[in-house]
Length: 470
Ligand code: 5AD
Ligand code: SF4
Image (tube, rainbow, N blue to C red; front, side, top):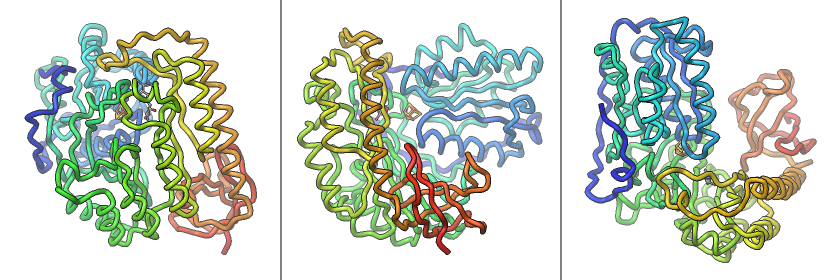
């Protein structure tokens, strides 16, 4: 048994970054041929971890199911970013408890970011005894041994490391899409924004070797993939821990040479965004004109308390530079309202910067105190009612600008990568423009998996309608 420790997770010294190869341990034979169900919450990195969990289990002879009742093994791949992510997981656990009452040999596992939290593990050990095993974000590649140990001992097995410098290459994956693929380039985060739990749950910032990344993209190209999204909590820090001068701008140039038709990258911290990066995005045809650039607040006072290391003026300078130099770029952001001590004036500064930037889209959140982070101890004198009102006010403004941004696409002919049938209307297709807008496309021929010209005919609040141009 290994239990998480937030104090250990905070340490950054003396962590040796080791590259290890995946060790293909054999799964207990009682599970072979049986079905598994995986549910993933949270960000794209976690989605990608979900693909690995599926890959590891499928490789060992288990079969994926999306019917919960059919599964012999259920894994919840959790997120810890805000309290509501927690609530969703604990809500689902109630369903699993009932299921297990009828199906005694059902195995239930928890992994992901919540597994890294001390308080969650304490709760699982005391209140959720029917959870069979837990592993964390640092030992996903050791999942089979964790499951085997649970089966062998018959006891709840909790195996969570608090920090690790390991980068495991060659983990099997079952990718959710045949056309777009996530590619991790940097794991962990060393920024320690005062509200954020990620530096504790995902550990030290550590870059994958450029050769490993390029090899992975080359393999994806040979399998017919059309798009890769380079992933990291802060991709702009790529290489800093590994090379003296090789950066994300260099990596983009090298990945571009693989010939993959589309390259995206998320998420960018404004602090590390260099001119070379902007050059690379604007010069390379297959790097898509889309930047997700979280601002978090428009108030310098709050930005300082958040530990963001830039001012609103610096953000604006960078923002304008990207807008000017990258043709047709769309820029989205993240904003938190109701940070401890946020006054009405601070909030008005956030509205003001939204009015200035006119973001193409924004993800907005109410501050959620995360145990163990500095901001969870800050005096918070803003009522929940006030926070909800601010969120509403902000959303109205953000929606106005995303609507305007969508309106500007109408009548244009744009390139879309078509990913499948439209979710809302089976007779249509869905795809994404180069600047990452969702389009529902009318077409009388199958265009899935292709990059096609689409004439935009209508703008909706969160999507566009278009017609395939033969
Ligand atoms: N409370 C609210 N929002 C948060 N985010 C991160 N931590 C918190 C928190 N404690 C938001 C930030 C980040 C996005 C992924 O989630 O805006 O950019
Ligand atoms: Fe959630 Fe952050 Fe973990 Fe992603 S890294 S799953 S957003 S807590």
